[in-house]
Length: 187
Image 1 (cartoon, helix red, strand yellow):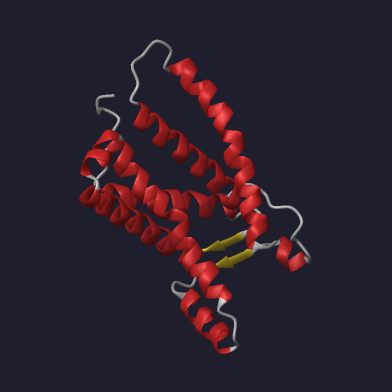
Image 2 (cartoon, helix red, strand yellow):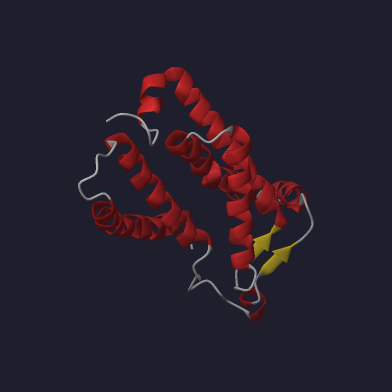
C-alpha cells in the first residue's frame, strides 16, 4: 500500500472518531463548564490516537502476499534499522530509512506534544508514556501478521521526546496560547 493509501485509511478512522467523540463528550460534560481550547485539543488528540491504532494495531488486509508475510516480521536486534538503512541506501533505496526511521519518529511526536499541552505532563512522564504506548503497540502486533521491531520502541520514544521539544518551543513562542489548552485553564 502506498503512503497516500495509508493516509486515506488513517483519515477514515480519524473522521469516524469525530462524531463518536462529540457524542461521548456531550454526554459526559452535560451542563458542566468546559474549556473550549482543551476540548478542541482533546478532539484532535483522540483523532490522532484513532489513526495511530488504525495504522499500528488493527489487522491489515490486502498486503499479505506469502506465508512468510503472514507470519509477520520480528526483530529483536537493537539498532538493526541503521544497518538495514545503510545497506538499502547503498542500493539507492532511501525510502526505507525515510519511512522506517522518520515515520516512526514523526508518528509519535503528537504524544510528546499533546500530553504536556493538555495535562501539563513533564518531560520524563511524557517520554515514558511514549515508550509505554510504543511497547503496547509492539506487544499487540506480535501475535498478528504485522512487523514487530524492537527499534520501533526507541524510535517512537525519540518521537515523543521530539514532540515535547515542539511543545516547549510552542511555549516559548506563544505561552498564552499554550496555557489556554491546559485542562484547568479558564475558558
